[in-house]
Length: 623
Image (cartoon, rainbow, N blue to C red; front, side):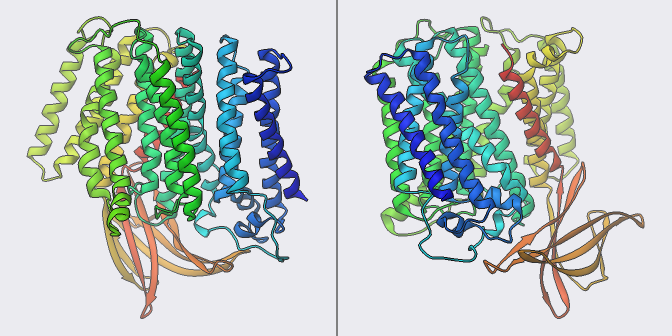
């Protein structure tokens, strides 16, 4: 009964969106824009009720629903019952179109925008909604009935039974799916011929928000992989990680391009193209994840037929967007004032660098797929390729981003260039001096120099941009510099945690001690404990320094009875300057296999991401 109600609400949302579309094409009832927009809001209410119905089915363990049967179990904690609703292909796609509709709903209340432009945006959003909802109904229906009477379900993938699942996918989808509104608004601007100052302002705010949410989602995913998967790291150039990074880079290029419009309305075609590209990359990423052609811990589906439907949607939407772009896009009214080094030229160079990096990631991700289709030979493209191509490509962009906000729109002048020169020379001398008297990896000094230069250059700009008292308005004015400081901190964290990481394997008896990373680690005891839906094995470790116990952590494994799966649970001691990361392996001859990592300054990664997200949200509130 619950599933029938959820499916009815889904159908009602489709019918409402169909009405909005046909009201635009043939307005039989002669309704005004405002009335049609008002009716469109009911579609969001219906789809939200449908999604909540699915969640309710998970909460009450309604195994008459096939999706609940496949992905839940009555003994699961309530948090994992709720998050399990989107921890599968069908449920995640329902969340996808729900978030898409919520964006339309919120956008319908935006004021100080032309009514016809708002209506046309919602019209295109409704078309997108119908395409994805038809896919949901006919190919991936989360409300199918279970033909067999069962007393319990098969359970959720144990790897996904983690609190991060409750917030990581929704945050990621707020970024991914949010680009649908960017796409619709860009196409509406072309069709209505209303690409003006208001159009740029609205597009900038929504683009910043979507990019901030995507940054948050990727950051949460990195942290989840760090502590849950037991690999000792946070980024592995996994194909599904790559497909989330591509729209992030394109979105970053879009945000930077929109800042050009603050000085002069140029590069309008480029901005519209990026608006189309961001959503197209999001759909393409969805196709790769759900087609089964990629093997990943993130993959939700392995049914190629589903992937083909999403690929068809990708070609329809991208083809439609590019056709409108090519046929209807007006010419830029102003010429680009390119100088040797002004704000416009620096942003254009930065855009080119980011798009090249995006294409490089795309090539590395799809190349193994192409080779396998053509030759039936499976190859792997991993970290060495991406580290040796993407990172060097991004280096010039990082160097330029530190001074770009302080450049002029009209001249080659760099404000307060004496201070920048002094800091640059001092930093260069210091790094050269350190590199001469040490034997560390040269990439370490490049990363340290790059991150420090971005932070110091941004601080110089902040000091001179406004000398008034500290106020919230001041924070809004410097949000771009704050974001760059976050990037600098992130670069330093990535550099040190990647290049100075230590790892060692040990074979220990309970009660033994080892010396590691200037600390003494005592393997204190092994405990076994039964929980509702799993059994946990834990090794307790005491970290000592100068004969003082300053930390206790647990590392071990969980055994899930329903799926008969064992997961690794890392033990992590977080410090401002390093993480001690412990993995408990198997037992042989009464000795336990222990793997220990020392990850220096990894906390700076999470701090940098947090700063970037906050700065993006501050930029949304900026007029």
